[in-house]
Image (cartoon, rainbow over all chains, first blue to last red; front, side, top):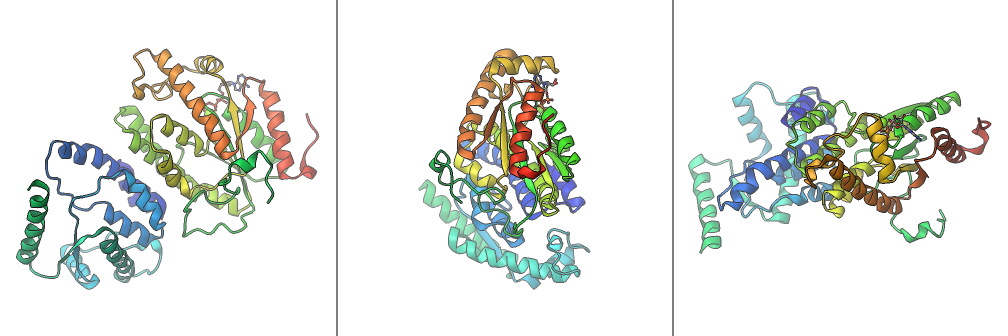
Amino acid sequence: MKAATKAGKKKNLLTPTTFSLLHATDFADRLLYKIIPPLKAGMIVLADRYTYTAFARDVARGVDRQWVRDLYGFAARPDLALYFRVPIETSLERLLARRVKLKFYEAGMDMGWSRDVNESFRMFQGKVLDEYDRLVEEFGLEVIDATGGIPDQQRRVRKLVARELERTNG
Amino acid sequence: MVSEPREAQVTDRVQPGHFYGAGLPYVGLEHYPGKIIAIEGTDGVGRSTQIRLLREWLEVQGYGVIETGWTRSVLMQPTIDMAKASNTLNKLTFVLLYATDFADRLEEEIIPALKAGFIVLADRYIFTALARARVRGVDRAWLRNLYGFAIAPHLVFYLKLDVDALIKRVLQSGGMDFWESGMDLKLGDDIYESFRTYQAKLLREYNSLGEEFGFRTLDARQSVDRIQKNLRNQIGAFLGANERPASG
Ligand SMILES: Nc1ncnc2c1ncn2[C@@H]1O[C@H](COP(=O)(O)OP(=O)(O)OP(=O)(O)O)[C@@H](O)[C@H]1O
Ligand SMILES: [Mg+2]
């Protein structure tokens, strides 16, 4: 599964729909092998990205909003979903500080909106953030201000998680 | 358009050349001159044989023709082959892989061909995937949404064969394989019995899909020539009576 996603990405062969479907396939695999079994065993699953990533990213690429939500209809709804929000400039700075080049799809270069990678990133991620704002409303995501320090963020995350655990166990 | 009384039962049937559902919002489909002709049917029913003959016939008349077939996309074929070989796939990931393969061929091959006025001969369309998924208990409404990006073909022919005839044909042309026998469904250890049960279930799904999507059914037990003649008659009538060549 990973192989096709990687190969497709490497050759920049993906359309918005095949991009979306490949990630859904990968997600289904992860859900069935890595998420559902521990849930059945009563464990806590920490998922770094979930269906909401697809809802935001794939719609920014132009797939139908309802279609992609229905596509993930097989996924378990998370008990708690955290959305770490930063302005585009901040995420761009953080990415650029870590590595030299932005990834092709991450910067939305496949959309052909700008030849300049940074500019393309701004345009594409701008749409992604707009979609996330919609998701916060629609699915009740908990927003974490991720511009602040890590200890502050962690404090808030722990509080939300503790509250959720109390709610479901207590 | 006024539909025939029999067709009127299915009120939500999509017009040929239109998306079944949400579609591809970033792709317009306005007035593409090309046509999609799909040939459906279970394994070994004679699709490739008929398509080869149809292609020759259409090209002689001056039509541009492309063929597209299941799991033949550049993107997905290696992955699907690998996944099949290892038997590790879950039904859900399988359905999604097939859909990805179809989406890739739709956008990279079929839509460009339709724009250019070609006739697309599809060796299986979405219906085989739907039948296989339904047999495996995948939710029907979910499947319909999933394939909402597909374009309704102009003609769908269904080569229909009963289980007994089908088994003989498959055995003659190379034998049964794991997936065609539905061994993943664990219907039993006996590959023959499993094949029988699985193919019978598949046939039931094809029949119900036929009603839902308006297949034109042909008896696949007839001779190759007879089936071909029937196909040519119907396709010729559809493409325009003027261009129909003398029968032979
Ligand atoms: N009408 C027919 N009558 C008898 N045998 C046929 C007929 N049509 C095809 N065959 C034979 O059946 C076998 C399968 O035919 P073919 O490869 O065309 O089927 P197919 O539907 O494309 O199969 P597959 O599912 O394997 O792609 C071949 O050996 C072919 O010669
Ligand atoms: Mg064939």
